[in-house]
Length: 294
Image 1 (cartoon, rainbow, N blue to C red):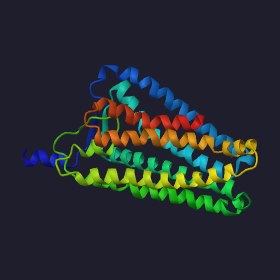
Image 2: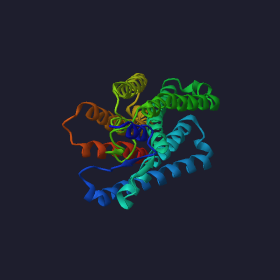
Image 3: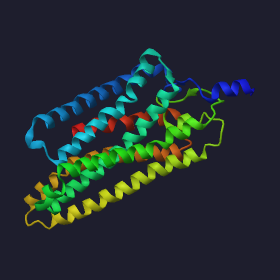
Image 4: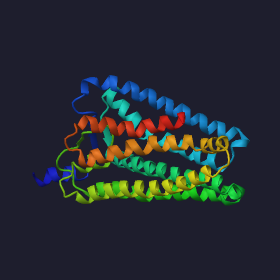
């Protein structure tokens, strides 16, 4: 390739999002269920924010964390779904290079944030059940604010290397991304450079966040279960553990699809690309909708 062409693609002005390769004729129909789920997620999370804001009895740590989840579940799908729908319905495939990297950052940042929020909510349930008399003194409004800020900073710090790494590579192969969004590996696979560092960092980020957060959540719930089973009556045990069921449902809805997506993307080389892309979109949108239902 000539130096002129290499220079032209080193810092491309835009990328082209292909959508779901092989299923172009079905794009219009594929978009319909995603649009419905997106609307449900928006309405549900806005409703949660409105109810918590207007009901003074809900001004406590568990519901503050729930509001952080709701904000994250508004931002994360909004960073990808409108563009995906414009691809499917209006064939609007172009995305500015900087906008692509920004979208990449938001995807990683708020996914990591969601995991951190679940960890914080597990800690809240642990204190509420295992040390209820000190709950209000341990989890004050200031502590909740600090935890929320720490979750945001952790998400931003872990997400920032992805667009920074993607920006430094020369893109001299193609500017067509075989995806509906600027997913990290889908973008850097277009670079004409050794991208092993991107692969390793993506796997490290995903497994580090999942393993550490899941371990903390598991330890918290092990202690919660021990406290619950030490209660004298069955009704008391069911009532106490019932306060955790919605949280556990949201955890399962978030981690199981996400872990499956990571493993199939990294190791499922025989899985069709169209499945990877559709399932990646499911992982971005469905948890945001299901958490409203839980």
